[in-house]
Amino acid sequence: MVIKEEKSILAESSENEVVTYDFPYTSRSEWDARPATEVLPLPTPVPYVKYPVRPAQERSKMKLLLVVLLIAMVVGVIVAVPAVMLSKKSILAESSENEVVTYDFPYTSRSEWDARPATEVLPLPTPVPYVVIHHSATPAACYNKQECKAAMKSMQDFHMDGRHWWDIGYSFAVGSDGVAYEGRGWKILGAHALYFNTVSIGICVIGDWTNSVPPAEQLKTVKALIAAGVELGYIKPDYKLVGHRQVRETECPGQAFFDVVKTWDHWSPFPASHEDLVNVPEISDDYKDKYLKKSVL
Ligand SMILES: [Zn+2]
Image (tube, rainbow, N blue to C red; front, top):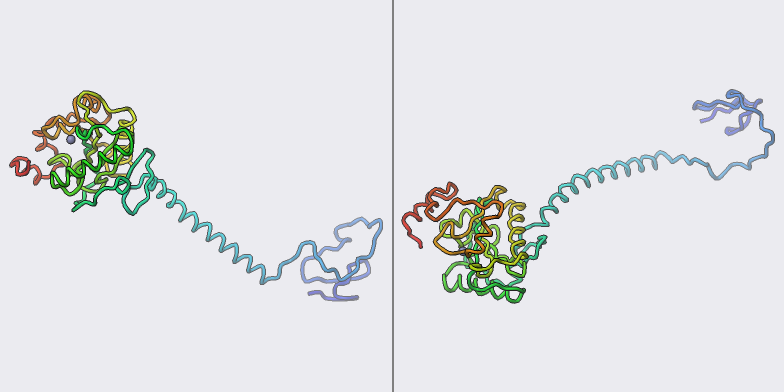
């Protein structure tokens, strides 16, 4: 709003005119301007203003847009941070028919080795305090995917058809090809170490390791698999590693290999034999009774 005292509303302020604006205004004379040395007239009215002033409505739209952007950023951070944390975990997520898995070691899921479905399953209470190391004795060591798939299938057939178990007994098996093969997996109760299945994950190192030791690549994957189990929360961080012979009368996992297992981190001399099972605190009284009565052999 301009209060015109002499010329037009937008008349130029000059020495001879008094203009009153409705906003704070300081004329040339008031800020002690030097006179211009020359002037040219500006054709008016002008179509442009160098610093365009947005209409109030547009300004409020901009404010709204900024607020929406800010909210989107905050929501984005809230959603993205847990998503990134989850995605770290999903890198090592468990394999199953419905999940995509990527381990940082070679891995073959049940469906990839054409596993037969389990006839029945029971949940394994996790995290488990023990990892039991086995060898297969038979089948012999396998050195490529084709041989190892065949080994997995023959073990599953023997366990299901010969022993009438619900599935292959082991939680996992590892071939001399350096590949981990999914057996019952992390969450299903295994059938690999009598009276000890409820407290352990059982890993079969495919081959007969009585007189020779598994190749380095195979052992590396066994260790990586155990580490993944710990990272995923299925194996206790302070787990104890034992050979099958420490919980059952058996030569498993073979003398030569057992001598290697005894050098690994987490190997525990207890239990030393199946007679110690009654002193394993994690085994339920029910299983201890079954063991003492030898109701299942
Ligand atoms: Zn065994």
